[in-house]
Structure formats: C-alpha cells, structure tokens
Length: 202
Ligand SMILES: [Zn+2]
Ligand SMILES: [Zn+2]
Image (cartoon, rainbow, N blue to C red; front, side, top):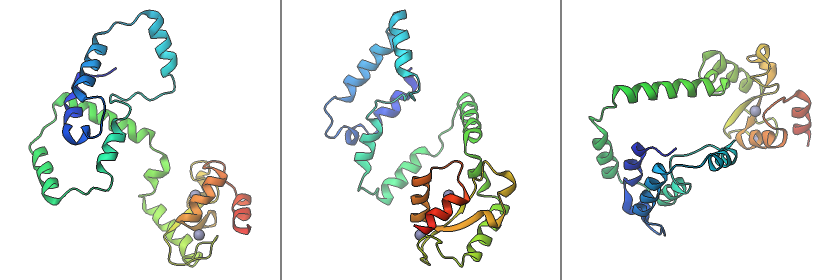
C-alpha cells in the first residue's frame, strides 16, 4: 500500500509537475491519506487482490511517470540547475535502516538481472565479441553494411547453451537495426541456426 514516506518526494517540484493537470496534488494527497486509513471489507480485499494479481503496484499515481516525462521531454536542465540539484543532495545521508533496505533491494535486483547482462562485462565475453566481429569483417551479415554499430548475436541463446557461450562459431555480427529486427521476428528464446540462415537469406 501507499507509504507516507513516499509523499514528500511526490510533492517535490510541485509547480512544474502540476502544469496542465486537472486534479491538484493537494487533493490527491488528501485522497491517498483517506485511503491509507480506510479499512476494506474482506470481500473488497478479496476483489482487490484478484484485480491486482499479476500487476506491479506503484506507490505513485498511475500517471506520475507520464507527467514527469511530459515535463522533461524536449527540455534540458541548465548546468546551474543540475549543480543546484547535486549540491542539494550533498551531505544527505540515508539512515542505517534505509541503507539496509537499499542493499537488500539491490541484491534482489542483481539476482533477477538477466545473467547475460552480468557476463557482458567479463573479459571472456569481450574477447568473443571481437573474434566474431573480426571474422565477419565488421560487417552486418544481414544488410552487409559496414560502419554501423554492431551487435554480436548469439546464434543459439547465451542463457540456454552454456558450452556455446564463447564459441565464435555461435556468434554473428549484426547491425543494431538488423539485430532488433531478428529478435522481433524470432523472439529472444530458443533461437537457432535455421532462424539465422532464414533471416539472412530473405
Ligand atoms: Zn541477438
Ligand atoms: Zn544490418
């Protein structure tokens, strides 16, 4: 549920965030305060839990991110504003309890993170990537363009084929555009040599 702790953050920068908005934030906060104290009947709780299943709950109003995005889109912060913001944070300390919570959340994140994301920073992976690019003459094997940003694509998936992870024969150089096109067409799992052959041919 909504925690009181998150509210001061929401009210930060209220003027800009408010622009063009129909429900004033004060009213919204009042509503959420009322909601906090509200006791739901067992029936309502049951319905809510069904409705929320599979949904990620956010402590912020559903259009919160959208408003921030609207406010930030096309606007760059001046160096003065950035400096002020940084200075404002300086000297700020998290409590021991908060630090513990952050650490726990981060550990959970790492655990959840796709394994390949961690491997991407390892030397073995970097070496493999260069081997693949060199063999393919730094050319996208689909559109044959040279000079575009290249991705080394794993012909058979990284996560599903441990032995083939760093085998150059299991890699192919694709430009970013073609790489995206490939995964849009064939998905991210159980990719195969047949798919790559078909993709390159047509
Ligand atoms: Zn790929
Ligand atoms: Zn390409």
